[in-house]
Amino acid sequence: MTLYDRVFEHLLVKLDAERAHHLTYDALRAGGPVLRRAPIPERAPVRAMGLTFRNRLGLAPGFDKNAQVYDRMGAFGFGHVEIGTVTALAQPGNPRPRLFRLPQDRAIVNRMGFNNDGATAVAARLAKRRRGDLVLGVNIGKSKVVPDDDQAAVEADYETSTRLLAPHADYLVVNVSSPNTPGLRNLQAVEKLAPLLEHVRRTADGVRATPLPLLVKIAPDLSDDDVLAVADMALDLGLAGIIATNTTISRDGLRTPAARVEEVGAGGLSGAPLTERSTEVLRLLRGRVGDRLTLIGVGGIGTPEQAAARVAAGADLVQAYSALIYGGPMWPRRILSGLSD
Image 1 (spheres, helix red, strand yellow):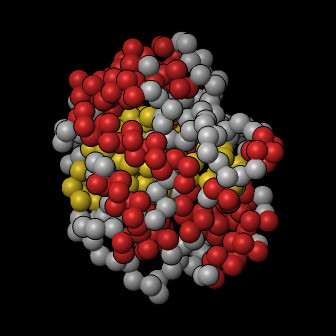
Image 2: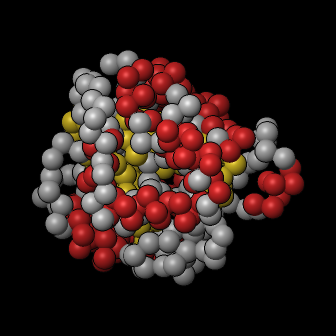
């Protein structure tokens, strides 16, 4: 058992999950220690979407919602970091408690509700970004107050975020798959998603001198037919890629006692229980799109073997967040050590 394992078992697990997150986040913001003793395993760079990633491993959105510590995460071994989800309007998110651990399943349930400082504040921070070899993705979502059945209002909301954030991003992700903003997942329907993505791309093209890779992030709860429909749409629109997958609303197969699951309540489930379905979705996508799109695999990647399996299933890049919570600061190095070039 590592030192982190002992600290997690005897201290962090006893803290409210969101409080533990903020303690870690605040330490990084304050310039707290970043691990340097253990070398980061070197991996061959990966070319995807016209970008060069120093390795395949990225930090998924959720850890750095407000672009305050992303530049420190490369020291842990990540080759790219995706910030957000950022909305056009600042919003507090859902009432607390809204973040829960299920240690028996190495899983997390969240119903954060896109709490963030808003696109204007995040853009101001990113304007000070020092560009290096850490690729930065920006994940944008719908402001809660915008009704999902008003297509014009939805497009205007995403347009605001895109106009402010696209100039500072290496790639942009449209998130329509979180279960914690009412009605958001309805936007995954192709007839609503296609015009939204076209609008976001036109907006990005209008504020940048060079094209910005645009991706969409989908839920594991889509049917196979809907997954394939999104793949076809992405090809038709000329998107750069698809991220598979977001959190799930399913609670099937959990080892956590049912009473605890019921106590935790609604929210998106992330972590180990997503491994099988997220891999299935990725395999479906790769079979449909061939080598024409970049695919980023996320959801239930906790071990080097699982990371390698996701690459074998078709992922160009992989991301994780929940596994970092359970694995600790040395976790990225362990993944990179076992991840084949």
